[in-house]
Amino acid sequence: MATLKGVTLTLKIGPGVPAPARRSVIEALESAQTTCAIGAKSGFQLTFVFSKTSEIATDLLPGGYFDPLTRVILVATVNGLPQVLADGPIMRQDLVAAAEPGTAKLTVTGEDLSAYMDLIELTGIPYPAMPVVAQIALILAKYAVFGVVPLVIPPISSDLKIPTSGWDTHQGTDLAYVEQQAKSAGYVFSVRPGPSPGASLAYFGPPIRVGAPQPALAVDFDRASNVDGLTLSFDANNAIMPYTFLRIPVVGTEIPVPVPDIGILKPPLAARPFVPAKIRQIPNGRFGLGDVLKHVIAGRGGTDPVNGSGSINVAAYGRALEAGGLVGVRGAGRAYDGMWFVKSVSNTLSRGNWKQSFQISRDGLVSQTSTVPT
Image (cartoon, rainbow, N blue to C red):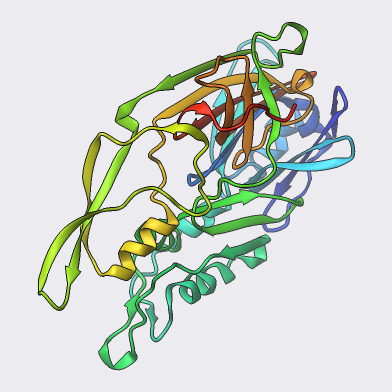
């Protein structure tokens, strides 16, 4: 393990249940980059410096120590509390040879544990008399050996087929099928490392934007500033109002119905939400009333017109910013101050330094609250 100004990094590598990395590997680690995104794949990239006579070059690389599909777990322990930054398989390795001794670099790039779900195509597996929630639970159960803990929220409306009239069949890989079911329900699916080392949470459900906010990002506050850079934008192209055609059985006709993004777990964060100017039809969007209510209550997601990006130094911020939660912004002016949703966080760690870049979003301008947690 390597000490990083009060932060201890733990690196584990190996098939199945990884073992602590060898001392030579830890000493060769130059930097680590990880990314955690909501509703998308997370990943990591580790860079090692070595010479042609080192253990990495003579034994580990030829022996398959860094081969693709080898599992990697990276944990940062801050004040005794572990935070899992990455957990998943290596998908690629790149070697940069150099003439100077000790300057060759090995870079391994990987993804979260959902990468294991995308390896084998299982088209044709039947799911007779099984609702969507049972199908997803059955699929995710296969990955319990990797420490994947499923959190499956049943869709608001789901059609259950009886075996005499047919049943659902699996299409594509496990990951492709689960993502398709999430999209159909207006949900998101992601596998996030943690909260404990060796475990990951597989979330299938509506976008969640509630909970205790993280300390505010402060800009232009003299010594109280904790943000290295912050850019905020208001782009109408990011806001789209989807609509569908609602079937009226009695009349035997269809009428267009908008599907607003008002998920119960996605409350508005701005006092002046932006009304989408673009209207687009949901693909194959001819639904019954239950399907329309499902999309309205779950929320369509991905329609925030106000977005921001920036970077922080963890030492200045006082803790690591986490994706998937709320965070306050202050010092950016009345229009942009207030609560935001953290869409993604990227970590860059090297000896003596830990920086984060982030992306935040919300539905409009002007804060709903006059104060934010600091």
